[in-house]
Length: 437
RNA sequence: GGUCCCGUGGUGUAGUCUGGUUUAACAUGCCGCCCUGUCAAGGCGGAGAUCGCCGGUUCAAAUCCGGUCGGGACCGCCA
Image 1 (cartoon, rainbow, N blue to C red):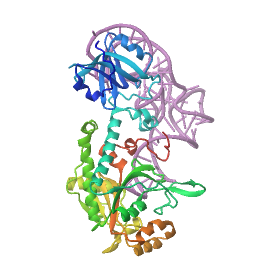
Image 2 (tube, rainbow, N blue to C red):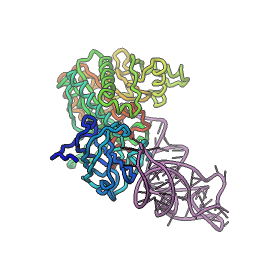
Image 3 (cartoon, chains in turn cyan, green):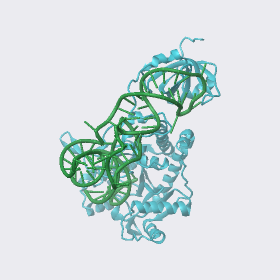
Image 4 (cartoon, chains in turn orange, brown):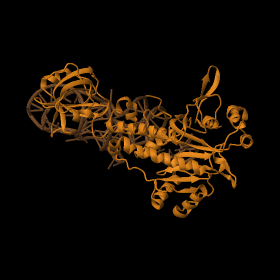
């Protein structure tokens, strides 16, 4: 055995370049197969796994220990066609760094993950170590990084706005309230008002941050805390410009996955979405299409139902060969107060939703930027202007025509990996019944 | 908030409709033994579940009924 003085750690992914060399690897005991005279240990680190061949006496440090024990291994990298990756580590010596004596609540080193979603989430701290779960959340990191890249290179400024507020921002009752030094306070349901204020400072801003909704929704696509990808931009010619930016942004984000972690895209069997020329239809046109194609009369409905969205998605898929479709011009009364009514037809607003594979993914609009118009709308909706002082001040002192949108990041990931439930693409989901872990 | 489904060893399921040879089965995991090339290893053996909980019907309940707690799906609402 040739022994070097001190070996620094090598990641398993770099081992093929170290053939014939003595190396030290560190990671988790992913699995072990004992044959008596020859034994195989699978070591996992952040970059992957590798097989280590152990003599019987080298198993002793692992007596009584379970998988997920943290180990250090010193050995020689050898070419070996019989090993999965063509190499393995031999003449190895094992050192236990952190012993594990408890048995895992479920197996995380098999091809398929067996536990139900509920059981998985109860044990997410170890369940997330499962390879495909790692893949999902590595890709999530790529989405966020690409979101930032794209916007920063287009002169947007990243902002971080407060999540504690003294007023229930957008007028809804669906906010979490709590006591803040003896005063009532709320968790913000979106950064909407702050990002608009910041258009008055930087013209173009974006934020990645949590949004809180106190809705008791029991669905596969809602969370009570989700990570919102917010964008807001000033000096726009119209909402079309905002929609163009959104499509360019999403294309960039999704392409980034295949560039940064193609192996994860492959492991998850992700079908990268088709963009094509993303169709744009108005809310009323969508309802007419549903009547003609699916025979359901929705003309009296002020909003789209989940079934409507599935139909619209199917129509876009079959008629336009795309996974995306914009629905624009929603009834003004159904949108938030800051949405700009269409000057040609104020019953409808310059607003849009982007439907991705039959599910609402993004909501946006051109905003009211005129102070007097904003005041009239707030008063006509019975809202108290006193609750919006800071917001209104920004408009009182000059705001350009502006618009923006918010992407539900967990939903984007959910549809990308074709998960049945948004909780599968959220690390530690918060829903009506789940507050831990 | 409304409607509908489901709770069986650590995990995933079968058994429930049609109550009784069920000592509650199978797979995986765990423990022990065997095996020099596994890679979802294999073979043999073992431990592990009073069938979510409470009550009722019955000679007899995992199985039927009621309640309760937990989970899931759809709708409403949204991202």
